[in-house]
Image (cartoon, rainbow, N blue to C red; front, side, top):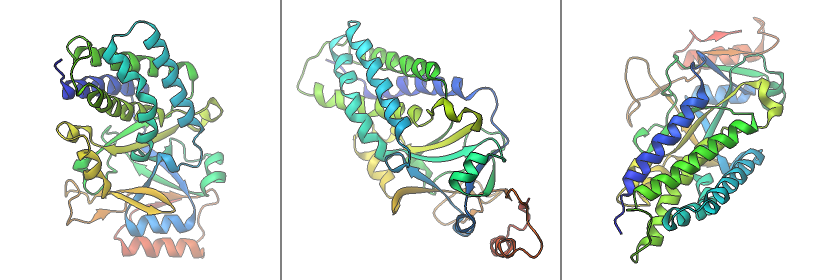
Length: 314
């Protein structure tokens, strides 16, 4: 039985990316906003990094759980529709693979509005603006970017849209598993391990989508995500290679996180010996800043030490 693992990864990757682009809409906001407290503003500025938190450590995991349930629902639909043996094997392994991929998926949260009362109450009164340059390829990236894939995702609130996205993804996974396995007939001693390889890659792509799912209660918040995870292109020859290459990016401080940084302007990509820029372009809070404000003084001192007194305060 011939297998073409990278053909499967490429096909499913293209299909899921097409779903992502359709969900994103036509335009990216010129600025995305991240809400936090005063102390964290100073930490982000001095470290020149924004943390993306592991999906397994997120405070509210209901959306991820709901997304996994949608996957299982669509898997059962596809399996019961008469899928061939090998695609059926891959689909049945997806649930366990999804649980594993949570630990390898990291999320930074934003919204498209600078006056969100909900986010201020939950995360802090300070609102940091991040300039997207209207470019779909995120400026914020890990320092060693070759081992990671980083993408924007717009939060999806309508259940019918979420279900349709997962349905299309599951159909693509089954079709690609059939096409890259010579017709879906199971033969040979490596079939199970190859099915697990397919399921792990497919589950990671599904997890990317699931992290953008939110309940309709939050639709007015217009939330966005940056999702960072191991680059699947690295694991074609060795299934654990992408995790080993990605692992050194992960830090622990109560939660697992990855530091996302922005390259210094006019210096291209971040490399091991270059210093990142302060990642945000504006700082505001609902009551503004007074000239005798102690927090304003500390923020200006931080910006001066990092050569970014051009950042707007409001």
